[in-house]
Length: 251
Ligand SMILES: [Zn+2]
Image (cartoon, rainbow, N blue to C red):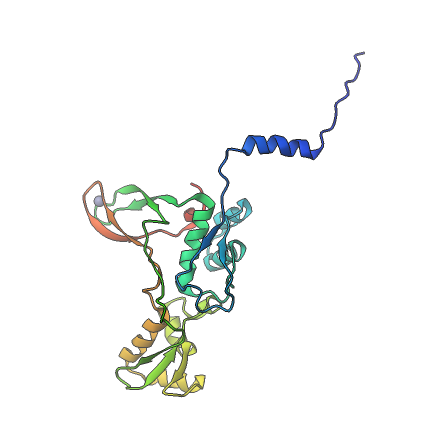
């Protein structure tokens, strides 16, 4: 019978040293310090906003989620963004932050296939999300809430941005129309929401649209559009970056 050999257990510090040596040259994902499109003007906290990379576990959750898009997106933001309250987040900052989460996790270059709207060819496309998309920041004098004149009714309304926790009220234009009164702080000096709600129901469509445009304020934030030129047929089109599950994975 041969002699049974003795092996020595290694303590974990030895593993750490070996692992550190092995991973020394790998570029690890880094957190990003970001300037929000709202310039954090309308949040209580004035902390630095830091975006950290997605963990493997979070990526798995995204890939396995179907039909629960908003919950997952808010979960990602809660886990990866520090320095701003996610329930209080403004829409103009939300898309921007999602792109930053991706940038922190996988780098700024995003590769995807785009179907040409003219010839239908699937075109391999890549975009540098840190450089190729425009971010529109609010100006110094921009306020929330802010006043505007209703052109038909001829009175002043004060409106505010919706917060992320209120996103159920503006998930589509029909829902927003029913809930528009929630984002009107005052109307001709009246602040009673019941009064405001009843008034909006009687308003001319031009006035309703004036309020809705001010509430959603689409010109601020990250602009997801870019110009696409099809290499197959030469067609030029304005396209939007596809924000599907693939956006939050490495492939
Ligand atoms: Zn084409």
